[in-house]
Image 1 (cartoon, rainbow, N blue to C red):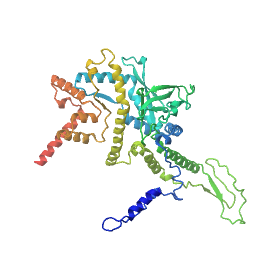
Image 2: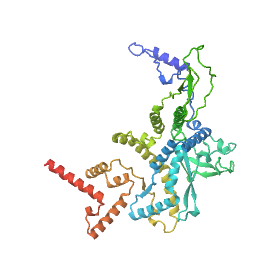
Image 3: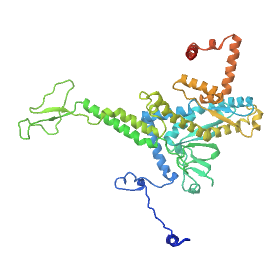
Image 4: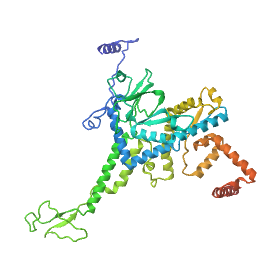
Amino acid sequence: MLGWLKRIRAFAGSAPKGGQRLAVRFVRARYDAAQTTDANRRHWAAADGLSADAAASAEVRRILRNRARYEVANNAYARGIVLTLANDVIGTGPRLQMLSDSPEVNRQVEREFMGWAGRIGLAAKLRTMRMARAQDGETFALLISNENLGAPVTLDIRLIEADQVAAPDFSKTTFADPAAVDGITFDPFGNPVAYYVLKTHPGAKVSTGLDYDRVPAESVLHWFRADRPGQHRGIPDLTPALPIFAQLRRFTSAVLDAAETAANISGTVETDAPPNGEAEAVEPMDTIELERNMLLTLPGGWKMSQVRPEQPATTYVEFVREKLNEAARCLNVPRNIALCDSSAYNYASGRLDHQTYFKSIRVEQSHLEEVVLDRLLEAWMREAVRVPGLLPVAVRALADHPHQWFWDGVEHVDPAKEANAQETRLRNHTTTLAHEYAREGKDWETELRQRAKEAALMKELGLTVAEALPKAERKDEDDDDAERKDRRARAA
């Protein structure tokens, strides 16, 4: 340090050509947020410099999991938010579309895979995984062979809770490895090598203790959101909202207690007489038993007043709205979805709030495809190609398996406006049928083939397009035709 200062001083004292000396100016700068004062000392007392894995240690994650599970199990708002999020992210489940050069191969692979996905209940398991990630912070699925599946491909997934992936015995050298993180071992490049799974849940009625299985990473699907570089285990998505839900319960209890107190006609007796004035004696802090629907008499010189709830019970609705808005923000869930109430919204506000929500859902679906679905498809293909006659022989020649996933489309608030916008995009060639069908969670090839079948049958039966439409839809189309004619007439 002293050597560095000497060099700086020597540099400052050396004169460049021309005999001028360089002036070295020391600038002292600071950030207000980095200052610790008596006013903010307690607020920042818990701030630390722990690493991502140290901050999310096994004990910290256990406490957060238990509290988040308790909140979701007992708080209707928390339960509804988690259920809605799982339903919106997963919906009825992903659908596979193969993108090889052979349409016949694509259709056969898609048909067999979706049939297998229905047998194992893939959509339901994915919804459970999304709920577990919200309240546990992470979710695990083991790739297993289910001989009772009743299908040529016996591949199945078994969900396990985060509690079961743990380091069961710290005396083993495996877990003394600094590259190991609570039941997961990694290679020098940071890739997971194996997961140590307890044979029974630590909270089960009958537990095998610390007995565990070493499961290779190729057979484990681990889905969590890494909020920090170097983070290997997840914390509940609801973590920032847990204190807010506790505040909601406390405020609700206070409002309810105040209302019950007022309804019970609790009150106090008081007198205007001076301390030595003429008023009948009353024992201090004595109670008077009241009967329902009865008159009441008091000692002479005394009067009764009812206890008034002074806390702002009239702002209860606004308090709940603001706190739920804050609690749902960490999940990117708009307030009207968290409340399941859009009475305070107008059309524009709803659209703006939902843009952030739906973009978040698309990000989560993309992450789920990379972490779970793509690996699941590869495992299924490895087993399916070994089953004689299940898939075309051409599948084995594919170097990879080009594909994409479709999810449920988002229902538009105003279907008529969206249909007009879609028609304009197609007319201007700024979109494609494949993209428009994908936005609705549909396969464009399947829909066009179905449309061709309908057109052929209509031609066979001698029906026009207008005659084949349902009554309500035909009426809407007639109204649109009339509106277009009126516009043309006005323009002429």
